[in-house]
Length: 468
Ligand SMILES: *Cc1c(COP(=O)(O)O)cnc(C)c1O
Image 1 (cartoon, rainbow, N blue to C red):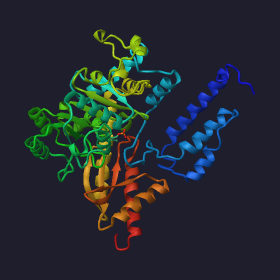
Image 2: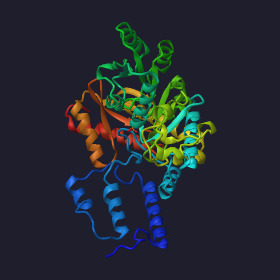
Image 3: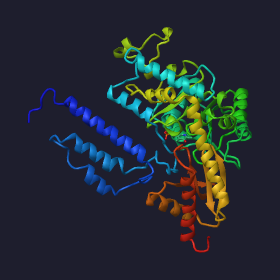
Image 4: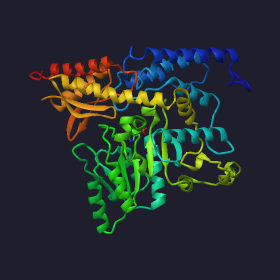
């Protein structure tokens, strides 16, 4: 077959039908969540058989390929939007955000240079600023949206190094592993990365940071960056932000706060109290694709020092000279704020979410996630077979079956997940395997939690004679 010049184009009526069918499929997914498994996997060979084969040379109906993707690929994954997905961090998406992402994809929307994307750039600047305001952070801060907390963290750390140069970086034993990986990837000397012990609440205490900073200063080393976590992935613990910020004022290191998980809690009255001091960070990372109801992927980096991101990442090759924009006129070129050049607009979905629901409704949805973890804690306390390990904090509770082994916890979590009823990931705290529930999906019901907790206790009891 000789391809036509317009071979890529489909008939408009056909495109519409395909689009409507896809909308039906997505709406069926969203309204049927909870009916299917919370997580499904298949054998690599079976997936390769269904999705692989030699390079297709001949055309095939788009309906067939699309159905294959939906029925095989989409089906076999974690469903982070499922009401009983409690593993790692859920991703309860919302329809306005999905719509905005479709608009971006369907219209090749780009947020790179000013001239090439002044509209999408403005949406991104506004969305970052709305998020900043929603979290109670001071104005002004420069923002950029990146693919996830990992990329946003390394971008913030690169800016911090550009501002202050190398030195010692301080983390805790609960810091997300993307931070160490990022530091090493950017060439930070491994000998200058300190992992400080967290306190009994799994928080980084300012006293611990002070001792380490003073020790390094005495040894002639320069404290460069402290990474504090606002909502650890393991337990939802919040480091001593005010105390560490006071130390920063005294010693002048860079304070980077990783609020990838917990940041949105600052929209709620309880969370605002727990996250006191977040507003004193030099840079903050928040992941809207975790707790702000966004489809993957979107993370936000906010930096207090104006112009620093642009100074760190600006490139001015001759083939981009015509599109940079005029800084004096307030024109921002987003590709000068990170290592990305051509980039989709991740801002439309967040913008439309704020515009549609309003910050107060979103705050209520976040508050519900906090309350669900508190409900889970009460259920655990009411079951004589179980004990709370870390209390409900920012939508995460951990617990254990009294007297049961690490293996019993790991196996009960994998059995409930294989069964499809719920997805639960165990975690390890102070060397002990425990159950962990992350409850940030506002569509989760109290019955979903009650059923999951009872099943976990039953599974451990069935596996371990003597534990009842
Ligand atoms: C999830 C998480 C990250 C990494 O974010 P990604 O979006 O998965 O890259 C970093 N820090 C914390 C505290 C997190 O919970």
